[in-house]
Length: 333
Image (cartoon, rainbow, N blue to C red; front, side):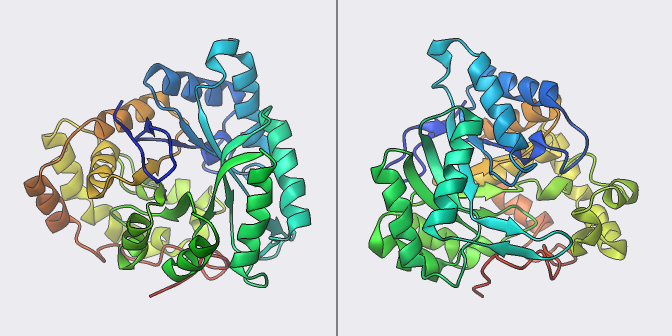
């Protein structure tokens, strides 16, 4: 597996990571056995970056990762570079709320460490920045966790280039996580450039467009079965039909390269810049292997041009989030 150092203080990690939201039922039914198969396959292929959060299954994702790590021989328990997140609160039946106070983040971090069975997390994110607290103050809180030896690096999810700059003036920010794929190009409007300038890793979640950039994109039935997708504009009504129609040429191009559609989407993202780490989520070992093949495939400049002629910036129909889903992520353009 290709490795890279995506940020200033990062160790060499696999260029492809795993998003562990899929270890819960968010995208469909799964269990610990399925999660263990994915993690075992990851080890077999040298994928060592795992990205989870306390909110994924209300702790379930972290617990399953912790159970798997504890089942390993002692010499293998340091294999994974673990990232987790805290800072989101939810109200039953309502929009999400956030808490970046030291008291809350400290409590959530300790609970994450307990579920993971670790004394230290490699990377800890503020999952959503609470704008009621200056981001500089949030950095000071995270620095306390670092000085206490509980985390190695810290980052933020879904913040703007301006907020990253403010935070970085207090202390180097190890990573920013953002949705980034051929169907969501928003980071190219400043975040991609700013993270590279500051030597901050850009961790790309949903790199295959929440299943859209695959050989089997979501059907109407699968969308209706997903609480998230059924209210997401990109997967509703005519938007879904148009998007599936548009990606047919991209699917054909992937076949021409002897790759899966998801594999080609991963290859494109890794070719965009060396500080990018895609973290696809999957419940299928075969799908993971397809994306590993894509991560190992090198695209030429001509290949990149061909891909972007098929899927140019702005091709996707529908916003990436609904009104409630946009609560928390920063808009900056």
